[in-house]
Length: 475
Image 1 (cartoon, helix red, strand yellow):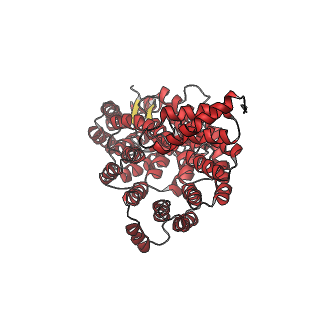
Image 2 (cartoon, rainbow, N blue to C red; image 1 turned 30 degrees about the vertical axis):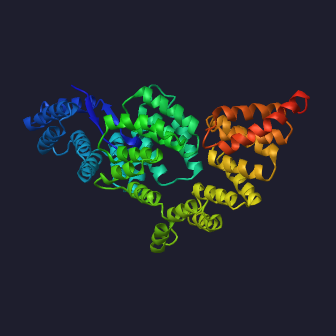
Image 3 (tube, rainbow, N blue to C red; image 1 turned 180 degrees about the horizontal axis):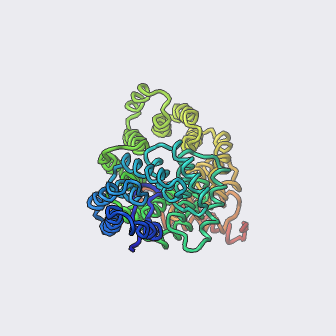
């Protein structure tokens, strides 16, 4: 008797590769029917044939054979279950739901069937219906990995509170200590860690997932998400390229590709990818609208769009950025309104802080940017603006800390050496000032940075004299 093999082509981390042995149940059925009518025995033979065809990837043929078996034995839960997977792989979600419902009607306590039903309900957006189904599956079998993975997605889609996600992460952590946890379970754990802001842990979990299954669409997708969360579109592109080989036509793959292109400044290409999606999801529509806003560089055009959709956070945020240098005080108003429109979007608050710096309201900028730094300590935009504001306020000790962090984070940001050198100079830390001035001169652009280069060259002779007279110290 062959193994029952199937696959569920899914977006996100619920791409579940199923290879489950239902041999006992079907063997039992075969034994029972030996003394019964030939149609029942024939149904079992058809079911076995369908499994073989299904395993070879001929879904349409397998589906036809499952249906033949069900005509002979309508109360055949295994056949309904496999039929559901074939339909799911063919994108016929409504029929797949019907098949899975029929399977669990025939075997009410079948944890595996309940997990499949809950999964397809989530895909169809029936989250309220999915939750009790998945909870029942886990009540029957606490080690039902597919049911747990689907429940994780359900909680993430519903924006469950941190306490709920933390509890699920504890469960996921325990489950991944079991023997041979599947890639989908490691991926679910990574998704929870990412949602809780534990990106370093998420990267380790994704590594485990890809070790378990290097071609896992779920794991590759989550790996791309983690890289994008870390503002690393170049790394994300590596995973997206692999996704395109494994699952090239899915909406999830195209959406991730568009995000990578947008993250590397290829906005028109990103928009073209989104336009190729036949049935846009809310996430696709949201990104497309954001790209349209981003590609508009004329403030008057954006203000016209804002008049049509008052209170739009993306439009207000765009105007915040467009006016930041041109008209800082006008930018302040747009930045403030953007933050009020989308209070959970830290980017608007960061834009507000940058506008405060441009408007030379340095004290206000330091207050806001210090708070934001506490929320996102690794955000280089926050730290750069905070460094600038502290520098302008002559709070050099504090500014020094920020400039050092920026250079540790982005060693090629050579202008940081210029400002750090001035900070050391003002603090009479002359050896450090000299080292940073020289590093700036080594890296600076002879044309673009001509003014700063001239200032440094004017300062260096006096600085050398101070060093020769042993003035200054290293702190």
